[in-house]
Image 1: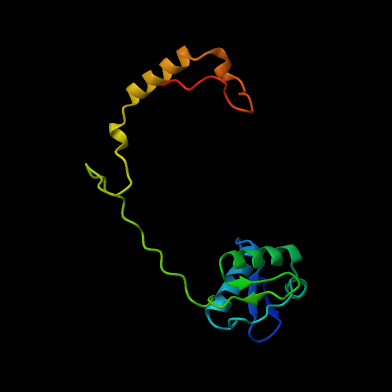
Image 2: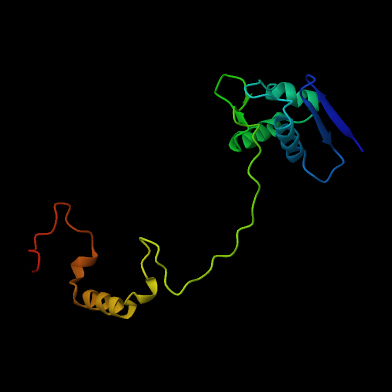
Length: 156
Protein backbone atom coordinates (compact mmCIF):
# COMPACT_ATOMS: atom_id res chain seq x y z
CA UNK A 1 0.00 0.00 0.00
CA UNK A 2 1.64 3.20 -1.16
CA UNK A 3 0.54 6.04 1.11
CA UNK A 4 2.05 9.47 0.70
CA UNK A 5 1.86 12.29 3.24
CA UNK A 6 2.25 15.96 2.45
CA UNK A 7 4.52 17.62 4.96
CA UNK A 8 3.89 21.28 4.23
CA UNK A 9 3.37 21.93 7.91
CA UNK A 10 1.97 20.16 10.94
CA UNK A 11 -1.53 21.44 10.19
CA UNK A 12 -1.61 20.01 6.68
CA UNK A 13 -1.01 16.28 6.84
CA UNK A 14 -2.67 14.85 3.78
CA UNK A 15 -2.79 11.14 3.05
CA UNK A 16 -2.99 9.89 -0.53
CA UNK A 17 -3.13 6.17 -1.25
CA UNK A 18 -1.99 5.53 -4.81
CA UNK A 19 -3.09 1.88 -4.64
CA UNK A 20 -6.67 2.80 -3.76
CA UNK A 21 -9.43 2.48 -6.33
CA UNK A 22 -10.56 6.00 -5.34
CA UNK A 23 -9.17 8.70 -7.66
CA UNK A 24 -6.39 10.90 -6.26
CA UNK A 25 -8.49 14.04 -6.80
CA UNK A 26 -11.32 12.62 -4.66
CA UNK A 27 -8.82 11.58 -1.98
CA UNK A 28 -7.23 15.05 -1.95
CA UNK A 29 -10.61 16.78 -1.69
CA UNK A 30 -11.61 14.45 1.17
CA UNK A 31 -8.36 15.03 3.05
CA UNK A 32 -8.56 18.83 2.71
CA UNK A 33 -12.25 18.81 3.69
CA UNK A 34 -11.50 16.73 6.78
CA UNK A 35 -8.54 18.94 7.74
CA UNK A 36 -10.88 21.94 7.67
CA UNK A 37 -13.68 20.18 9.57
CA UNK A 38 -11.27 18.88 12.22
CA UNK A 39 -9.87 22.37 12.76
CA UNK A 40 -6.36 21.59 11.56
CA UNK A 41 -6.94 24.32 8.98
CA UNK A 42 -8.56 27.36 10.58
CA UNK A 43 -10.82 29.92 8.94
CA UNK A 44 -8.80 32.43 6.95
CA UNK A 45 -5.71 30.22 6.92
CA UNK A 46 -3.67 30.24 3.74
CA UNK A 47 -3.31 27.01 1.80
CA UNK A 48 -0.17 26.12 -0.11
CA UNK A 49 0.00 27.24 -3.71
CA UNK A 50 -1.17 24.67 -6.22
CA UNK A 51 2.38 24.29 -7.52
CA UNK A 52 3.85 23.73 -4.05
CA UNK A 53 1.18 21.22 -3.03
CA UNK A 54 1.44 19.36 -6.35
CA UNK A 55 5.23 19.15 -5.99
CA UNK A 56 4.97 17.94 -2.38
CA UNK A 57 2.38 15.26 -3.19
CA UNK A 58 3.91 14.24 -6.52
CA UNK A 59 0.69 14.93 -8.45
CA UNK A 60 -0.17 17.25 -11.29
CA UNK A 61 -0.94 20.88 -10.63
CA UNK A 62 -4.20 20.45 -12.55
CA UNK A 63 -5.34 17.85 -10.02
CA UNK A 64 -4.69 20.28 -7.16
CA UNK A 65 -6.45 23.11 -9.03
CA UNK A 66 -9.50 20.89 -9.64
CA UNK A 67 -9.60 19.94 -5.95
CA UNK A 68 -9.32 23.57 -4.88
CA UNK A 69 -12.07 24.55 -7.33
CA UNK A 70 -14.40 21.82 -6.03
CA UNK A 71 -13.84 22.80 -2.40
CA UNK A 72 -14.37 26.44 -3.34
CA UNK A 73 -17.69 25.49 -4.97
CA UNK A 74 -18.68 23.65 -1.78
CA UNK A 75 -17.87 26.73 0.31
CA UNK A 76 -14.78 25.39 2.09
CA UNK A 77 -12.26 27.64 0.33
CA UNK A 78 -12.12 31.17 -1.01
CA UNK A 79 -9.75 32.68 -3.53
CA UNK A 80 -9.22 35.86 -5.48
CA UNK A 81 -7.07 36.42 -8.51
CA UNK A 82 -3.50 37.16 -7.51
CA UNK A 83 -4.12 36.14 -3.92
CA UNK A 84 -3.69 32.94 -1.95
CA UNK A 85 -6.40 30.34 -1.57
CA UNK A 86 -7.72 30.47 1.98
CA UNK A 87 -10.09 28.52 4.18
CA UNK A 88 -13.54 30.14 4.09
CA UNK A 89 -14.86 31.74 7.27
CA UNK A 90 -17.87 29.44 7.62
CA UNK A 91 -16.10 26.32 6.35
CA UNK A 92 -15.70 24.49 9.65
CA UNK A 93 -19.41 24.15 10.22
CA UNK A 94 -20.48 20.66 9.26
CA UNK A 95 -23.20 20.52 6.65
CA UNK A 96 -26.63 19.62 8.00
CA UNK A 97 -27.29 15.90 7.91
CA UNK A 98 -29.21 14.69 4.89
CA UNK A 99 -32.66 13.67 6.04
CA UNK A 100 -34.45 11.48 3.56
CA UNK A 101 -37.59 13.20 2.43
CA UNK A 102 -40.84 11.30 2.57
CA UNK A 103 -42.58 10.98 -0.77
CA UNK A 104 -45.01 13.80 -1.38
CA UNK A 105 -48.58 12.84 -0.64
CA UNK A 106 -51.08 13.49 -3.38
CA UNK A 107 -54.25 15.17 -2.25
CA UNK A 108 -57.56 15.32 -4.07
CA UNK A 109 -57.55 19.13 -3.84
CA UNK A 110 -54.47 21.31 -3.56
CA UNK A 111 -55.20 24.53 -1.68
CA UNK A 112 -51.70 25.97 -2.07
CA UNK A 113 -51.91 29.60 -3.21
CA UNK A 114 -50.88 30.27 -6.78
CA UNK A 115 -51.25 26.65 -7.85
CA UNK A 116 -53.93 26.24 -10.54
CA UNK A 117 -55.90 23.06 -10.95
CA UNK A 118 -54.27 21.90 -14.17
CA UNK A 119 -56.57 18.91 -14.39
CA UNK A 120 -59.58 21.15 -15.02
CA UNK A 121 -57.98 23.13 -17.86
CA UNK A 122 -60.25 22.95 -20.95
CA UNK A 123 -57.70 21.38 -23.29
CA UNK A 124 -60.23 20.26 -25.89
CA UNK A 125 -61.74 23.78 -26.13
CA UNK A 126 -58.27 25.33 -26.23
CA UNK A 127 -57.17 23.04 -29.07
CA UNK A 128 -60.39 23.81 -31.01
CA UNK A 129 -59.83 27.57 -30.64
CA UNK A 130 -56.23 27.29 -31.84
CA UNK A 131 -57.29 25.20 -34.86
CA UNK A 132 -59.97 27.77 -35.77
CA UNK A 133 -57.53 30.68 -35.58
CA UNK A 134 -54.91 28.83 -37.63
CA UNK A 135 -57.52 27.80 -40.21
CA UNK A 136 -58.83 31.37 -40.71
CA UNK A 137 -55.51 33.26 -40.47
CA UNK A 138 -54.19 34.74 -43.72
CA UNK A 139 -50.95 33.32 -45.12
CA UNK A 140 -48.98 36.50 -44.37
CA UNK A 141 -49.75 36.03 -40.65
CA UNK A 142 -47.16 33.23 -40.58
CA UNK A 143 -44.30 35.27 -42.08
CA UNK A 144 -42.13 37.90 -40.48
CA UNK A 145 -44.19 40.97 -39.63
CA UNK A 146 -43.40 44.53 -40.65
CA UNK A 147 -40.91 45.99 -38.16
CA UNK A 148 -43.19 49.04 -37.82
CA UNK A 149 -46.20 46.93 -36.84
CA UNK A 150 -49.35 45.80 -38.56
CA UNK A 151 -51.30 48.22 -40.75
CA UNK A 152 -54.53 46.28 -40.32
CA UNK A 153 -56.95 47.66 -37.78
CA UNK A 154 -57.43 45.55 -34.72
CA UNK A 155 -60.72 43.57 -34.89
CA UNK A 156 -63.28 44.40 -32.24
